[in-house]
Length: 149
Image (cartoon, rainbow, N blue to C red; front, side, top):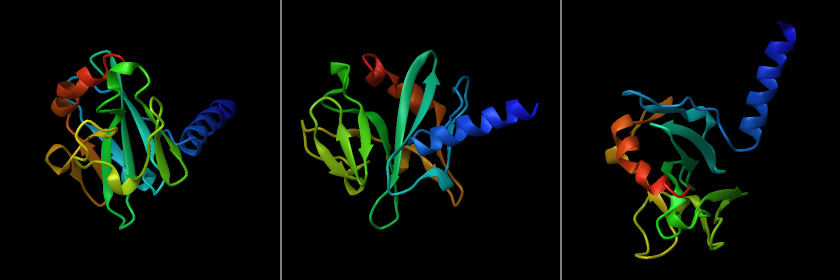
């Protein structure tokens, strides 16, 4: 029993330290819940599976401490198979074109035709003092952008 608890704790610690946070698969009408305590100035990535489609949500605090959220796939590069982002310190980097940007640019509509993660704006999420909730219906409607992911 002690070995099992240690293994679970080590796995959770590794996920948190690597910038990934454990998230349950979403099915039925479940929302994705991100504990606010796991969000920082370095982008974190939260995997979620919706009806068999693997997806990921990016969450980060901007320079003013505001929560920014987006899907971890690029508006321009999503169908390349490489349109994922990684965190490089305070910057976020596109895996397809190498474009770099800061947290202040996440979750807003920006350059038309440019590299930008699909935003998850206030209309499609709820932020409380303890968590970020992204509704299942919004996740389900957005899964098409992960078809080539």
